[in-house]
Image 1: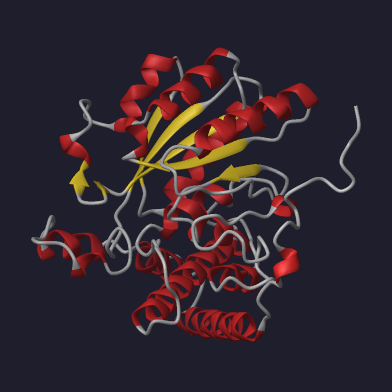
Image 2: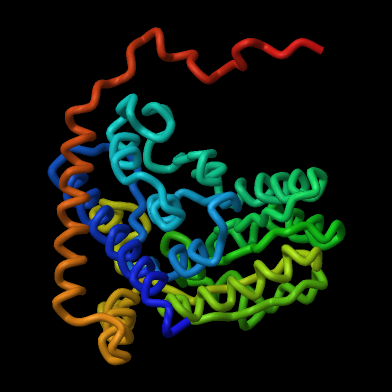
Length: 329
């Protein structure tokens, strides 16, 4: 792993891409160019990137409302992602999905949803489809610590275990469900401890360490491909921004301290990965700077692409709503 420069630099590039994408999105919200609920992934980049780089291109993922990081980590087109956020027809979903509903079946992104825990049963269904078709595709279902308390989450894990489906349940434990600390809603020490109730492995991993997440996911993927069933991974991570952009303007009192946020910023996933690459002689400081400049330029071009793209026309309203032609029995 440490000798695979191409993979390690891919991880670096995708984490930087997610970070700069969401920094740009945050700026758009602040100046009123982007409206509606927007949930930034800043601080959690190592989870999606570490996990998705352990997958094949034809493997599947499902996501959630904090949904920009997952498609980019899977190799999604940032032009399409930015256009989707602006409601343009060149977006992933032709402008119909917006920030919380990105999907691209061509690279295995089955969809994301603002309904908490709703994508976990979708992931289990896709895993069942893979098993019935006799292929060895696996599915990662990304979900948060808040979703871990939803009934749909437990139903999905239970069924996946009973049928030994190739599913990886990846809990992005960023400590807070909106403003509620997971310690106040979870009875066990770690969310991954719940795996024992469903007779599957439960693994707690450092979510700020992209290589640690990658290795843990690789093991879970190998297990799933071998027909041994699902794994519950808990990546302990942190979001630096609010649950959604602008939330801080309506909160009556803070729910976390500045000291806590600063402590987590000291373990920034991008900074940690850069340090590892430089210390191990895998990449030079100049290479990192060049990569950062390339990423910034790519996101600037994506924003311009989105701005210049057309909005859907009224007649596009029913496009993709029905099969064409409608299949006959």
